[in-house]
Figure 1 (cartoon, rainbow, N blue to C red):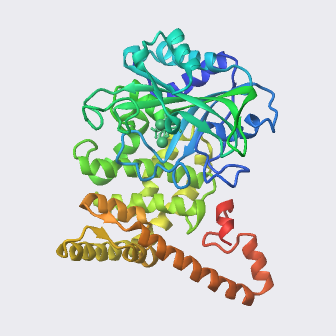
Figure 2: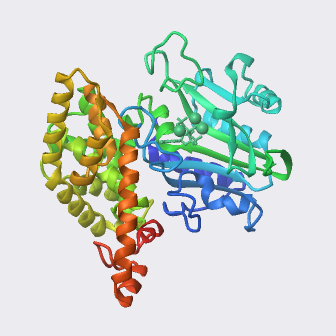
Figure 3: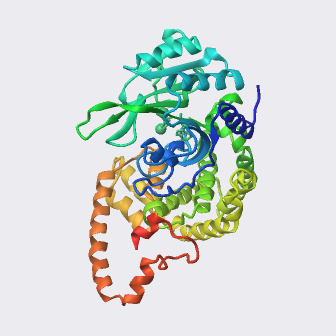
Length: 475
Ligand code: ATP
Ligand code: MG
Ligand code: MG
Ligand code: MG
């Protein structure tokens, strides 16, 4: 049956409310008290302390629809966006959680019941994976879902064992997979569940937190095992709507229509242009949500991830002929369409617009010149029969023209070149050393009151907004 993305979000929360779960609002994209984490990248982030037993809540089961960003840091999907059917930098994660209450059996039951009874997904197209040693999960899937053994796939540590960190709670996972059919994905004859292409689409990940790992790597059973699950709203929506990529579901329709209006092109007509459509749509959402949560473009930390997102979108916009700032315009669609669920977007609407115009205008001052230079370089390399863009050159584009390396990477991909990332890293390290020395000298000269102001975060380009932790780190 056809359901809108918004309806699926609501059906999910209603289902888990009906089964005794407290509905907890999404937490901000900047984690409240977790400096180890760049952005909230899963529903469980706001419950970390509850899982660790360091915080008590008046409920033992919860469900949420969590804003997530996976760009920069450990979970980085930025470079996938545009090229795969299923990855975003910003997405919404539906999740249900048990804090020492129910465990594997109920978690499997709820997930299966919701997908096959509430959403009416066809059972024949579903597979599940379990951790290779998790016989318990294997037989529960047989019992609860009636799945034949050949559709329960055992995978190893990399895919199906989850850990909060090097030590602490951890455990096996189980993923629910939807087969999109042989016409989607890599098309290799040996493509199967676990392949990294888009055919066997991972919809939902169930984490069974049942061990605690100590410094020596030993596992001991947790006294009260917990459940943490996550399902991407965009993926399940695309699946329900029978479309092959997240970007074809109704959650993106308004954005795609806007990009069409601006460019005169239509999404789905040309493979190369479609990459640009997807990047712009995705990055508009990420930029709007990040700014609404207080992140501003900068050269370090969270702010730099935002800058990379914005600049990457601008470069792709140019491939569609967009010569003037447009991101404020595409981001306004995000504000319009999503403020009902995320009112922070509406509150920040003007800030989002201003910041995006500023950042885009600023980048456009150097974009053309940088691209022309890159063009010359590629020509030179081609003539010399070389395929690798030197690290020093990537650094020059970064340092003088404000090109985050992702942009060079995208162009290299389009044109069949490779990047000398090692060389680039070396140049970056040299620069860090230079600025460390220079900064020490400057600080010695700076009057005390100015240093105080900097410490308070007033030394940035944009004054008057909240300073995020990561930006404060620079100062
Ligand atoms: P994949 O293997 O497809 O990259 P994952 O195993 O990294 O996904 P999890 O960390 O298990 O993903 O996150 C739980 C769920 O969140 C996934 O099953 C998927 O539905 C969704 N999800 C994860 N990453 C993204 C993303 N970048 N964009 C959209 N949805 C995502
Ligand atoms: Mg992933
Ligand atoms: Mg996975
Ligand atoms: Mg997973």
